[in-house]
Image (cartoon, rainbow, N blue to C red; front, side):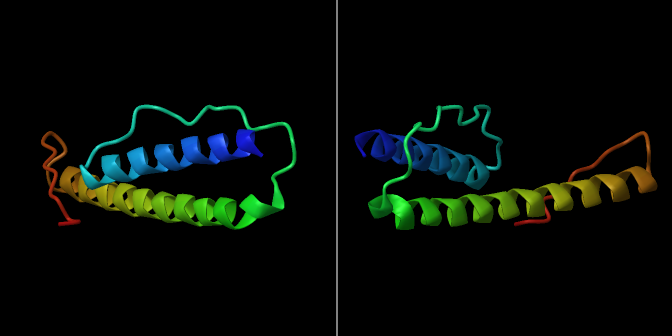
Length: 92
């Protein structure tokens, strides 16, 4: 069980870093590449792991929203003047 607790702790720290990065308007340059434990997830940790999945989906949706907004602004900017790209913060 300790192996799973350490894994979920590390993943939660990664999500914290992703969230800080998004809040700061940047992109996190690292991936979560820690190997998942080879044993089954203990029943006692099921709720925590499910909450982390939900949080992951929320952060993914936030990133998708920002990417869509960026693509829209870039597309309109290029239509207006293809030689000059002007980015506007549409999320503020």
